[in-house]
Image (cartoon, rainbow, N blue to C red; front, side, top):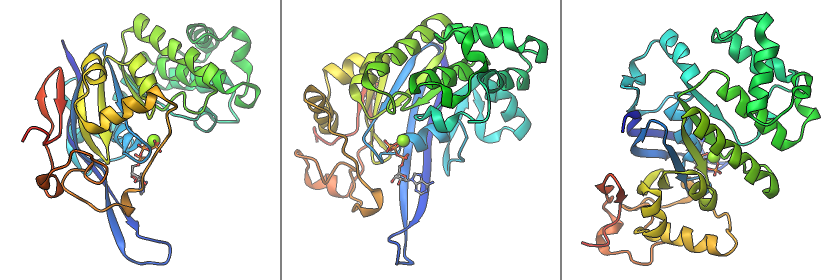
Length: 311
Ligand SMILES: Nc1ncnc2c1ncn2[C@@H]1O[C@H](COP(=O)(O)OP(=O)(O)OP(=O)(O)O)[C@@H](O)[C@H]1O
Ligand SMILES: [Mg+2]
């Protein structure tokens, strides 16, 4: 299958103060050498608990934040070498949807302005054609034409997220990165929005990266899954493999935990001791070498794992 996106050893570190009263700085490897490919028309789920680096990865892939190392190829073009103007014109092909549509939509703009600006900016219509195009897009995201003149505060959370999705699809993107797009919504609304993503994917053949701490949601929507822990990929592969034949103790734990009520656990990377394997502290099958050596992600295209379990 054709590759749309290739991420190669992507890295992002942050320097943060160890505590409020200390001048000592700590380096956090928020994204620690992550690589993966995304095929055209495919959906990749990125799952991991709070603080594991999912949002940083999402922002770095789209160059909304500059990575410290590694490369991102979009349709074979190396994003690290693009000029600002080239990047600007590529923006229409890569869109992002955030967790909280209330903060990602401008509260002073009506729906037709929010979606219309994207259309006009990228040359999809002129001012005269805006309303009718926006109405068409709203229909695609399940909102009737009354919404054209509404402000964000006049809508529910689910409706706002539909508008954000409308803005994202307005420019006919090839890739949508959705960062926890349903986490701020009521559970009953979450399913509707997930169905909308599935519908869009089917109708428009858009590739998607779907970020979530909730493995259940990721399982529902993804073709492939990568599991991240402390900025590293610990397991990746086809959904069936990762979900029904998990190899890494962390993935196994995540799957166990969704059988009961999923408890959102998280960690603060700066409070953590750095061992070889990122999962060392919590691992129940760790060996001596795991303390100092970082396991690489090894396997084939259908399934990879980063663990010294066999040697
Ligand atoms: N701008 C920043 N400055 C300093 N540290 C940051 C910054 N952004 C993220 N971090 C740190 O990088 C690590 C990864 O954060 P990130 O937000 O990417 O995680 P996440 O997996 O998206 O978490 P969540 O599920 O809570 O959204 C965390 O330790 C976080 O504190
Ligand atoms: Mg996040």
